Image (tube, rainbow, N blue to C red):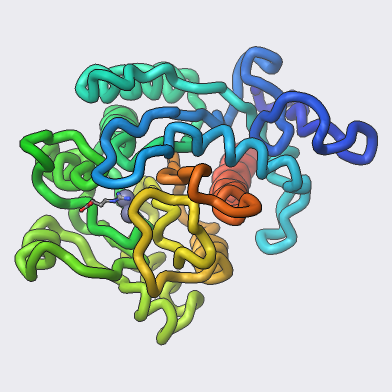
Amino acid sequence: MSSNETPRGPVDSSRVPRYAGPATFARLPRLDEVGTTDVAVVGVPFDSGVSYRPGARFGGNAIREASRLLRPYNPAQDASPFALAQVADAGDIAANPFNINEAVETVEAAADELLGTGARLMTLGGDHTIALPLLRSVAKKHGPVALLHFDAHLDTWDTYFGAEYTHGTPFRRAVEEGILDTEALSHVGIRGPLYGKQDLTDDEKMGFGIVTSADVYRRGADEVADQLRQRIGNRPLYISIDIDCLDPAHAPGTGTPEAGGMTSRELLEILRGLSSCNLVSADVVEVAPAYDHAEITAVAASHTAYELTTIMSRQIAEARSK
Ligand SMILES: N=C(N)NCCCC(=O)O
Ligand SMILES: [Zn+2]
Ligand SMILES: [Zn+2]
């Protein structure tokens, strides 16, 4: 969208019932209906990198279905994200389920193409493997980026069954490849059993700071967001959200659930506290609808993507008004 065009927004749910018609994210237009977009919401139906329960390949469409109930004004950030900038649903990236290396290349190439049009990406996963090719693509454009990673798990392990590209290893690969700004790396929501204490030492050596799930509970969302914001400054920021950062009570539909997690309220509040950060792209991954109940997880994920999209749209509008 050029700066003087009005963005095309979602289908009006006071005229067309929100449960009617095929689902796009937030009932927004498809990318082919608008030509170009400022924020591309893109699905990656890929889950061949998982270590436990499969099913996140269906996550993107579950989030789209649950997002029918989102409304156009976001009071928590005082913004109408779909009026401030064009947001459109770019459909799915067709990644090979039988060849992880090829899938990783496909995701990177598709992300290159979308980012090349000037769009920011709001990716709906898929398992966490896909964060690596997305980060590669974002780093080609912005250089090494700050990373804020919400997850129960570190995802900085080395290999599984000798495989380098899995959902437990994307951030170790990213550090090895030099595509992250090691001055500004944080995990939020970490908890649960590890393979050994070495996991933590290795992670720290890579440059990560950890805010555990219990830290969020004890210190509160505002203080955590303040601390994260200070660490990130105005660096280009990528946010990767594994929905298992939430407690299984708030997100049962996921492949590797861990007890003792954050509430969806805490996650959304931390994100709102980061609204001034320079968010260049983001993902929400690991939604596995087969284990979900009454769309609990998909609703939480759709609201999470809504807050992230709002941050991006506000920044795009602010940059244009300067
Ligand atoms: N990224 C997610 N969701 N999980 C990683 C868990 C890896 C493991 O099974 O040790
Ligand atoms: Zn996880
Ligand atoms: Zn993860």
